[in-house]
Figure 1 (cartoon, rainbow, N blue to C red):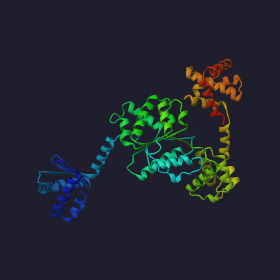
Figure 2 (spheres, helix red, strand yellow):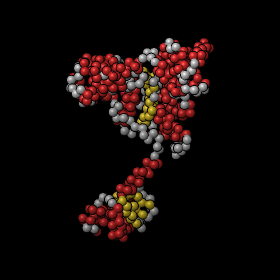
Figure 3 (cartoon, one colour):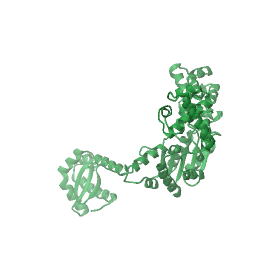
Figure 4 (cartoon, one colour):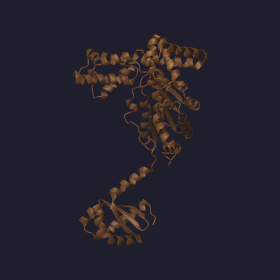
Length: 453
């Protein structure tokens, strides 16, 4: 016998009416009132009851009576099987979860990122307006939208706000937020056969209406992953589904990227988010103070101005300075009112660290060059002599000499105890490459821009 859930429910409701006539009221209320028909397979109707004990008792005491009632109600020779309903539901949920695609299972939107909590200023007004518009009309206006900036300026807040607003407006909208590194992880699992049940391309076709992907620059030099992303990207665009991307660079500056992807990024709306000006930073501080359940009036105006001026490179630094100040006022020197003198005392360690960070050192050159070439600092100062490592090492030596005027002997000591003639030879190779290869000039200029601000 094949029946729908509605039909099964109706059958059991009619059976219960008959049972109620034949059993004591108290017994009916205790054991039958909350039973639920779960399925009919072949000649068995499975019924969920409240406990395993109830299932055993009903089966032993009323099995024949209920089978007779089933025959009367349905006209068929059905047998009732009683099980612990809560256990069945758990099994069914587990089976459903097991069958469901497991791509990006840990990815989710953070509800704290909303448009209401985003502080708008001249530095981010265009990005805010475009994001707000896209959240209400996904796939219809700017597609893709690409937001780029340095770290801590609100890119992640805005793209998650898009997802949260879209879900609030239409709960059935399927939104996927992930970082580029999360996409890489899923591609690796797919490519190694870990998820053969459903292709990654099909997942995006069927289960994603809005794709929000953070830090796209992390796909750099990952050819196979970029190829997969290109296919997914094009499928979503063709289907009129919205894509929003963040990056630390505009499309043209995404080195190590498929030119087709750079071109398609550029065809959408590309917007920069600038560091907050002082007025915007002051607004942000006041919002953050309120979020800490504190009163902005307890902070002198000059304190707010001072923090906004000193820590306006990005919002994370600004918030970090405020949290340091609040921590100091609560645990180190408890006070309710924050004066200028108190503030300078509290954030002195941050200012000292900021000065160290801004200072150009040999170590900063090594770390910057290593990151640029996707290497580790220890590779540059170690014994490895592969062409790629050697080139990066020579460039670091060249910049050490040009920017810091470091003596050759000292450079040799920094780079693994090499003698001054080895250092001189490495620098000479860079100078020769500068004359013969325009790409070397571009690379050096980019590195200098990162080092000298």
